[in-house]
Each structure stands twice: as C-alpha cells, then as structure tokens.
Length: 328
Ligand code: UT7
Image (cartoon, rainbow, N blue to C red; front, side):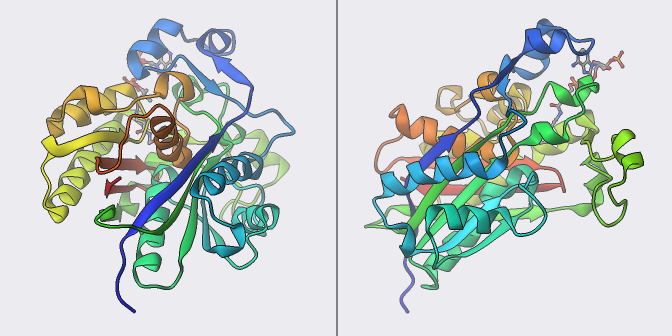
C-alpha cells in the first residue's frame, strides 16, 4: 500500500472544575505564591475531586476531538491512552475509553511514557497510518496525577495538575501532516522521577500506603537540566529531518513542566519567544496531557493556520523525551 502522511484532524481537551491555587497550597505546605510563581510560572492547576477519574476527562476530550475531526468512532482503528495515572491496572484505561466512545473496532491500550506519552502515541499512530494499518487513530494524554502527589511534599505538590487532551489523526491531504517524529528514553535516570510502591516490586499494603511509597518522588534540579537539553536536541533533530529551519516554525508547544524550562529551551533553539505557547500558569504540569491540552487551546485561539509549521517537544519521567514537526 502506498505511504500516506498522517495529520491531526481534530483536537479536544477536558479538565476538572476544581482548582487548586497557590494560595490554597500556602495553607497546606511551607511555600509562597511568590516562590511558586518565580520558580515555575504556575499560579493554579486543576484538581479532580474524589469521585472523578482519568477516563472521565479522556472521554470528554476525545468526544470533542472526534466531533471536530467529523469522523464516526467506529472508524477509529487505533486508540492510545497515554497515562501514568490509569483508572485501574486492568483493563487498560484505553479499553474503558473505547467502550464509552463506541470505538469498538479500535485496538485500544495504555502507553506509559510519563510526560512524553502523547508524543510517543502520536509517533506510533503516525507510523500505523503511514503504513496503511489503520485509517484513523485517537491519541489521548490523560492524567489525574493528584492521586499520586504527596500534598505534604512542597517540592512536588505545587507542580502537577489534572486533565486530558486528545487528537484524532488520519490521512493527510496535500503536503500537510506529520513531517518528522523522534522519541527516546534513558532508564538510567529512572529514579529522578518515580513512585517506588504500588506495583509488583513493592506491593500495595497498608504499610506502604502509610509510608507514602505510591507518591511521586522527584529530583527536580537534576531533571531540569536533562529536560532542557533533551527537548532542545530533539527539536533540532526533527527540524533537520524535515529539512526545515527553526525560523520557519510558526508555533512551538513544549511540554509544560516549568516556565523556566520553556524559556531555556526557547533560548537554546533561538526561536522567537512570541511563537512559544505557554499555559503553565493555569494548568501546571499535566504530564501526558500537557501537549494535547496546549495544542487544543492553540487551535481554539486561532494560533495555527493551514500550512503553518508546528513543533512539539516533550520530556518526562523514565526519562523519556520526544519531538514532532507538523505541517498544519
Ligand atoms: O515533567 C517533567 C519532569 N519534571 C521536571 O522536569 C521538573 C523539573 N524541575 C523543576 O521544575 C524545578 O527543579 C522545581 C520547580 C521542582 C524546583 O525548583 P528549583 O529552582 O530547582 O529549586 P530547588 O529544588 O533547587 O530548591 C531550592 C530551594 C530549596 O531550599 P534550600 O535547600 O535552598 O534551603 C528547597 O527546599 O527551594 C526550596 N523549595 C521550596 N521553597 C518554597 C522547594 N520547593 C519549594 C516550595 N516552596 N514549593
């Protein structure tokens, strides 16, 4: 079968109504709005209630993406839910989303690549569409990270937010579509951001729960440097592969981990700061949901027009990272 390019045909996003502000955090841990704002750029983040869970937001975001792509859910051949905060271990959140959407012909599964999950999923979907294995794919990044955040640990609890973003991908028209993708990981840095307990190595018991072993532990300072280097390098790589220059990029969406990381990547890449999208002030770090939520906001705000070059880059626990260059 002849190779076709893949394109993003529709996007969507959803998040809890609940909001946790820096002022709320000031009442929970020894921190200040001033510290959080200057060190991270975050002012508030969405937080799920006890009765809300990951697939709820994933389904809502997906329905919007499907509607905008004007496709029938039954025509989706691949459904990837990138998440590190699944509804439950079995079945996959992907299968639960599939059932809700009526996407009964899709191969559905979860993909655990932390904050890079959406770019990993986009890369997989791109290849499956290109090789004719599937016509339409739904790629979702969805997280309720607040369940794994230790709200007594000021170094992590200020960062993370809950939400979901989704993109329907399908065959591209003309010269539009995904021009290049690259994904990487390096497990030697696994303990820079991890949750030690709750799996098969340290099974969940009342003791491990009371010790908080299921919570995220992070060496933020060390991750910071790797994040900047990785996102800048992978961006250069996808630009090179597509034969494009950084000056030609009309919109750059980096993973929203920390405004200072975004600023450092922007200056390394030497792109105009005005083309770099940031919503970290209102979402915090939503891990795999960060890039698709940002992309959907950009589409809605008219920040991207047909033919524009859109650069996406991400970095997360694992460590994992990835980049994609898309002609919109
Ligand atoms: O999603 C992808 C993976 N994640 C990342 O890429 C995260 C990358 N890292 C970061 O964003 C930053 O490293 C953080 C925001 C997590 C921390 O910022 P930092 O500028 O690297 O601070 P630091 O960890 O070097 O800590 C500096 C000081 C410490 O106090 P001492 O030891 O200097 O007395 C911390 O205890 O700031 C203290 N601190 C805080 N103070 C007030 C740490 N967290 C807080 C806080 N409020 N929330």
